[in-house]
Image (cartoon, rainbow, N blue to C red; front, side, top):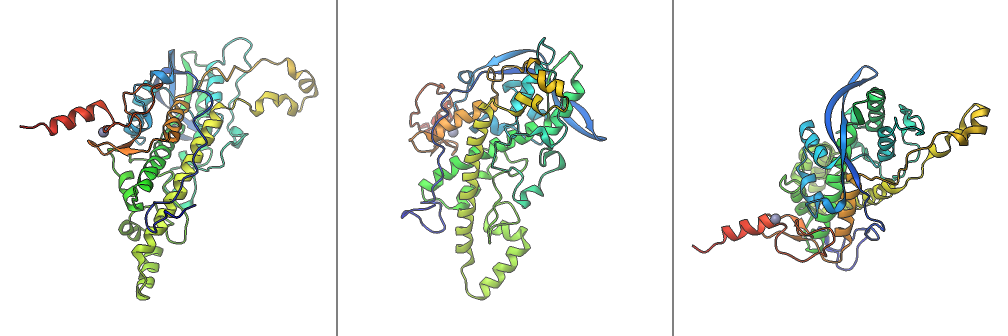
Length: 400
Ligand SMILES: [Zn+2]
């Protein structure tokens, strides 16, 4: 976990489990539709979903104007504002979930009316996730789960997407449908899973503390704030029961910690020093989980193998079992990806590059790749994260 450069209470010497390298294959192209918000119900409860309409525009990873979308457009989304989510989706397409076969289910639904495509049957049970490719569970620990509203718990975001597709099944004007909860969960998880390891890497290299990292993660200019704090909760003997935060804010929030602190102080223990170490370790665990989530998502997005391929084997009807091989085909799931896949590819390329993360001299953002640097260009070590930062820095520092 740490080496000789470890300095207690700081992040120095705490190493992240690096993802091996950039993905072997480039992100696939993906479809962007005009999308609108609709409401449906499941078991009498209302929920919101996004419905895709019209003809798609095809986007490729090279088309993205930002070299680090995770550090720009993605962090501009307020997941608690449906209009903000919709703006992102209408520009970049739906970031379907990698926690189940979200991209494949959506693609299958989009092509449900083509001839010879197997009938799409919505799955409204836990089996919506027949092959769980993730070891990372977005709902844990308990203190995080308590933050989540019902639509975001367990498989609910994915079941709601299936319900949305059931509602729109026979509507010829609707191409695709995904629950707002699925999009919110995916965007929010990506916002934090990308920002945290990058900032951890920067502060760890520069001898920063857990508090430094927390302050960065709490700055709206750098990281979107509204929504569940995925990857910011850890279970440890000192940091638990609330979102990882500074010492003052954690004792404000956790009664258990307040008691432990009071007791330790009576014994003359330096609680601030102990808290710093616990916070650094908690953040280290979270940053590693975040990287793992991204690697697993990358795998999940690209893996086109799944259970429905031979689902006639379990058909109770012997004729269906015998003749099942003659059924209609599934769509070619390897043809299209999603914006989620592209964001992760951009991120893994940047993260695994040997050049270190640095801070923009104008806005303080932690970054590696200049915003306007094209997808194929190598990373140059620039002082500013983007052209506009360069311009505004020069204006501020113009000699009078
Ligand atoms: Zn900047």
